[in-house]
Image (cartoon, rainbow, N blue to C red; front, side):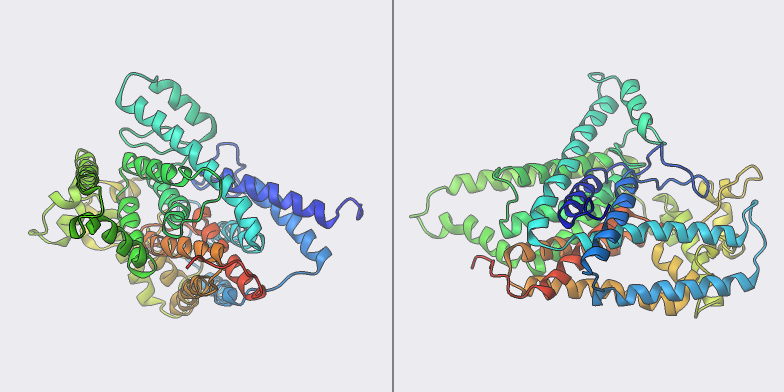
Length: 487
């Protein structure tokens, strides 16, 4: 048996399973994933290759005795320990059952969710271990994006025209997902459009943007990354995701103003060259390109404006107060849950009420104005509802469930990821600078998304963070690598 499990064979298996994990990331709510702790929307198909990768990786680390603990993950380990203490303390509060759910059962469900997220994270950390591995990984990632773009375009055609049978597309979607299409927004292979937007802003576009900034190409096809970037932006617009569009604009702006200033200067010099020097041709070509860019931006705005859910962001008025504004933009339930979460945190500031415990206190701490909300909250109070509420904000959720102590560890971990990004950038290694720009582009989008997302699983977040930490750890361990960036 030991002769069969050779180091080379284990490495080959890790390559395959890692590639399959990246390739299957778009499917977020796989219909055929077993229900361990009841129904849940987060059912990643990538769980299967990830679970197998955990086993193979464990055997590989044991045989090679190459296990090393990345220093950047110390705050995350501290957070896990505090979350465990908080969960035990939360049990002493003995909250009454909520709709047939007991505290300890719900806490176990929360820990399983976090455990799956940690599986994605640690596999990503230990498999992101060399520049060669990065080169072999990205084609799998690009392939996943490619089929997502194709499927998203087919959905858009079916939803907006009669060229493709909408019923057929919906049947195909339901064959692997627990949810069908949602008119007029596309969702790709994901559960809902906002989850598709997460894949673009956090998982796919950062690598494509880094390729454009650093001019690193993984394949011989120079057009591939620009084409995929345009396709990714296209399906993001088709998803009508407010968090996705805002997150992409914000993260790209941060990256350009920090590490992309050289690119901005180059574009500026290229554009103004023919106007300041008659010897440089192409003046009208530059003008035409500028007009096309302006046309594209205006078209994108008009496209988003045609969907009232998105247009409400700028059409709703603040003249009647913030509460009326958040109701107008359909954000009242989210704001109400956030306020309730803060009320829970104020009562249990140090260690919170335990992982998953905030759900048992939310109804008692909702603001009075939320009780008249005609949408989600009213449905939650229905006697026939069996839904368990949660804080729709990971930051507030962690404050209410793990207190200021747990949240400080979690915040320290996120800051340590920035340190990993900086270390890769300063290494001056070509591929590591490329990875650092991708990480820097994804990091603001991840932080921003945590204000509107509450799940502890989120594979796109944990895999992205794991890749950043893993490659930064590789830079620390391999300072002698001589592949330098182009000056």
